[in-house]
Picture (tube, rainbow, N blue to C red):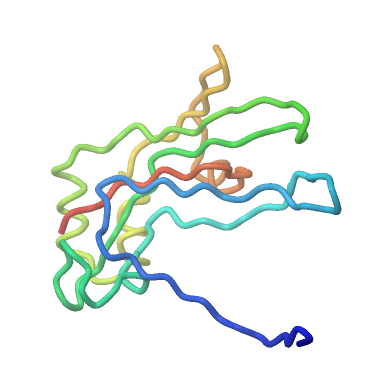
Length: 154
């Protein structure tokens, strides 16, 4: 029998949300027998809502609740598939009390991001012995390889 090809869709849902979420972005492309690094930018949010990706029976989540995560770290790689250098962006945390005030008074993810912008913490770039404070805009332009999120409990 000859192969029959058709378009298909696959969907996976989260059954239990973690306290810490680490997303590993595939930054390579297979071209024949070799691998090539993907250098293009991938957008990622500062505040991530996992609710749309949770199963109806998701543990630790009430019906209709937001499942919010705050970005606190990024690892990026510069160089090629054969060699390069890893560096990180790390967020110096805001006190939990301030964060909870923002969460309890904000209705949307976009509103939460805007409310946290002024007091959401300071980003630091770390590369070997080089440590430097950087603006959020630089963080959002990073070529992310790993994204580290922590769950915000409402």
